[in-house]
Length: 211
Image (cartoon, rainbow, N blue to C red; front, side, top):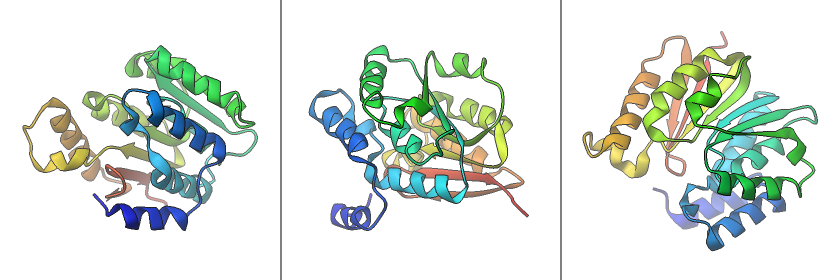
C-alpha cells in the first residue's frame, strides 16, 4: 500500500532485525510456499520499537510460519524474556527451530504445535505483548483471549487487518468478513487505546488506557 522506495527508505532509517532474522527471510523467499506471510523488516522494526517502549518481557505469538517474527521479537527481549509461539504446520515450524538454534536468542522461544484455540486453552497467565498473525477466521476469538490475558501495560498487535484493502468490500469472502468483524470489535472496545496503521498489510495496535 506504500511506495516500495518510500518503504525501503523508512527501513533504512529504522532499527533492523539481525542477520539471523534476515537469513530466515532470505531462505523463506527462496523456496518456502507462502513467503508473502513474512512480516518483513518494516513491521519487525515497529515491533522492536513497541517491545522496547513498553518494556515487554513476555510475548505470545499466534502464527509462527518460518520463525522470522518470533526471533525478531526475541532479540528485543531481556535475557530472561520469553516468546511462546503457536502454529499447526510441522514443516515450517521445523525450519523455524533450525534457524532459532543458530541464534543466541533462540533459547527465549518456546514452540507449541497445535491449532490456535486448542493451544490457548492450555495457557494461563498474562503477556506483555500478544501478536496475532494466524488463521483469519479466528481473529475475533483470538482477540477475546488476548484481552483476557493481557498484562496491565500490555499490547495487542494484530497483523493483516487491512487484508490487501479487501476490508473495504464486505462480503468478498469469509476471511475478509472475519477480519472486518475483528476490526469493528477492536474499534468499539472501551477502556483501550487503539490505532490501525497502514503498515504492510495493516497493523492494529491495542493497549489498555494507562491513565
